[in-house]
Image (tube, rainbow, N blue to C red; front, side, top):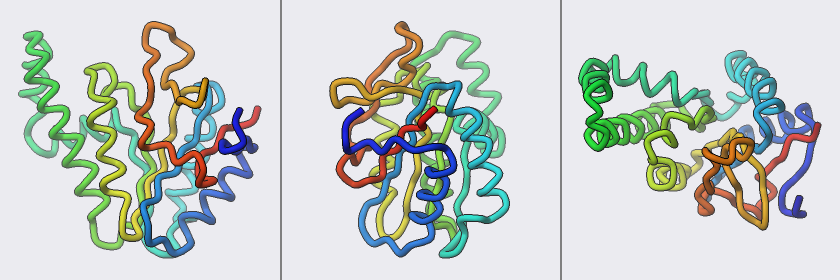
Length: 194
């Protein structure tokens, strides 16, 4: 693990994220928590509980998004779910990808721009990566994490050779996570220590 990636216990990471979300921010702020699925899942649950309790809401609301669940919910709310299901069933992959991309972008921008919201915690990137939207669409996060807004990414993966590999545990699914989202020298990249 490089010096720019902070190896901390789950409790220490929660404390650091709480501090980061509760202090004033003016520049681009993207935080990242990296771990294997076995370590990340229990941490996600604890973080989600803390967010639900309002533990990070000193400056405004922080919202937890499970991308797989919340993209589908957004499709349903927007009336696109049946169309998405038809496209998937008919193997019209390119059209489905466009709808998925549009839904993801709308979900993220509407939630981060909602009145009173200062940040998002994003987890569960599998749906985006299953349709090869990881590299391009996830980079939107860098664009919305500005002017006091911040985003925390919970990434199942590992750092190797200075690069973050998402889904590192499965060689067939392994892909590089967008480097522009990893602010390695900021102190905002955490690895869960077992």
